Image 1 (cartoon, rainbow, N blue to C red):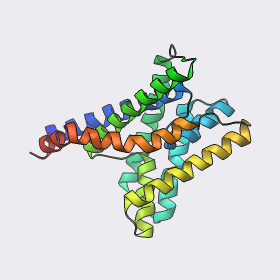
Image 2: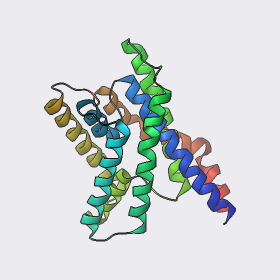
Image 3: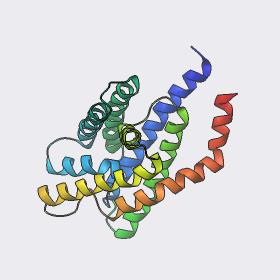
Length: 213
């Protein structure tokens, strides 16, 4: 197998692991997770399944949504299924490792929330640079953009807003209050993209140059 292809697969696994670590840190901060994880986070509080298990279920549904929307099954969608299973179990594993983290004051919660955004953005950068597969959330945005003939960047904010709205409704319906989706969710939705741009300026182009050469 080509050495650089092996490196790409390694980057994908590392990227997914770091992303799951970022999500786990945001969960421990208890200020709300990133948009794509807020629904599993809310449901894991309301029902006796783990965040990772609901993450797998939610992402599988997103892949099925793509299949229905595009009216076809692709290798990319199958790859997304595998990635979401890996992502779900890695999230539970990282939550187990971070069991000792339990911030009690608002400032500590925000510090942990901010750290989680930097970690999540780092993982996303590595995962995207691997150019092997994408998470179902991004795959769903790509599918919607293709059907509507719109740019990915224009569809993404509306997709995230929809997911957050679903998270809010589920929290109020099953918990009676906002938990799993809060101010940290909005913060992550705003800043993670900018942090990714920062990482791309710092080292992203170097990864691209190495993998292309």
